[in-house]
Length: 185
Image (cartoon, rainbow, N blue to C red; front, side):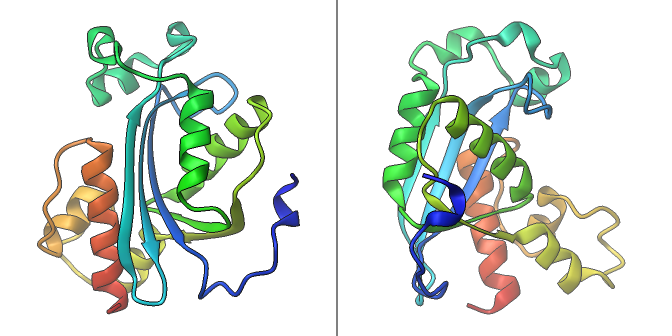
C-alpha cells in the first residue's frame, strides 16, 4: 500500500506512535535497525496505552559502524533472543494502524522504517506527518543558557525527566514525557 493511500482520518483521532530505533549506523542503504522501542499514545487524552520493545537480529553486522556498536553496547551474546526484522515490523505495525510517528529526531526512524518496510515488502501503516520532539524542545528552550546542545539527555535533565543512557525503551518514554511537558498536554 503506498504511503499516501492511508484513509483520511482526523489527525486528532490518530494514535501517535513514539519510536526510537537503534541502528548500526546512519546510512539507510548499508546499516540496519537492531533495536526498536515504541510507545502508543492515544488522543485526545495523550495517554500511553501500549508499549513495545525488541532486539532485531542483525543480518549484515559487518557493515556496522564500530562507533555505533560501541555507543549501543552491542555484544552478539546479548542478541541471541533477537527476532528477524520482518517479524519486528509486523508486530510494530499491529500496534497502531493509521498512526502518526513521533520521536526525538524521528526523521531517522522514518527513513529506516520506510526503507525496511519496502525491503520486506510490507505495507506502510503510518501517516506521512511527523511529530519531532527535538524541534519542539529547540523552539521552547532556545533561550535557556544552561542548554548548549539540544540532545535528549540534556533536555531530559533540564526538565527533570529520568533517562538511562542509550536504552531505547527509556529514551522513548523520556521523549514522550518531554513532549507532554513542553506542550502542556
